[in-house]
Amino acid sequence: MDNLPVCERDVLHEETIARVQKALLPPETYLDLAALFKLLGDGTRVKLLCALAQHEMCVCDLAALLGLTKSAVSHQLKALRLMRLVTFRREAQTVYYSLSDDHVRQLVDVGLEHLTE
Amino acid sequence: MDNLPVCERDVLHEETIARVQKALLPPETYLDLAALFKLLGDGTRVKLLCALAQHEMCVCDLAALLGLTKSAVSHQLKALRLMRLVTFRREAQTVYYSLSDDHVRQLVDVGLEHLTE
DNA sequence: CCTTTAGTTGAACAGTTGTTCAACTAATAA
DNA sequence: TTATTAGTTGAACAACTGTTCAACTAAAGG
Image (cartoon, rainbow over all chains, first blue to last red; front, side):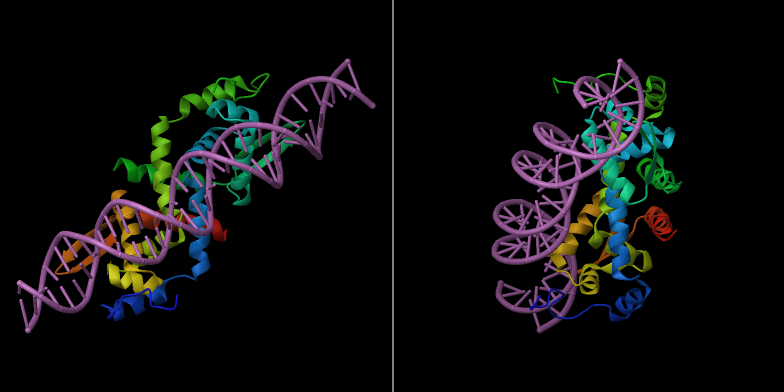
């Protein structure tokens, strides 16, 4: 980043840039936001979340429902767990997953609204 | 997909699976949803969208604000345009971008809520 | 006409990501 | 103990993605 990666000559609207700059949140916040949305940005994970929005399910159920291996499902559930989108409870050998809170449902609702408008 | 990618022996909760199966939307809907969230799942694009949520801006402004080349910004704006998240208007040589509607703001709000709960 | 500036576009390359496979742990039952 | 089933995990590999670079178009001014 030695040569300027910005506009070569002049910034067009310095006042706007300064105003927006001040309104922006800390950079890491956007990375956190992006990491959250990235989890929803995959067909398998969206299906998993929407399935769990209907009912708690075990890994085996989810694998059967989506036509995936248990391994693939478990990998994705782990990612969703780390972002606190899903929780689980163990009952004997079976692990039941469910949505952590209502945020996923809200995000999906707004997303669907955008798609169908 | 010749050998079953599902649970080898038995499905644990057939009734739950059947019930959730019925409640699920068509598969392409989840792919569309994932494609939408995928656009929000990148630090650069989230910043672009949050900047545009404050004020309409031209490509040069956005590049200066985020420390990126105009090319990189333009590529990302095109992706956002294709998903109808942003629109633009041309004024002489300058192209001003802005949010298409309020859905991005809603999604970001819910996302932030999840992160800070 | 030619020059300049804003923006777009396609190819290429590095970095990331999702699935598979094999090996593993946890819990139950014989 | 051994066997069985549910689930997890790390490595590997193919597929995908974001940026850069160079070449391009669009509009304005001389």
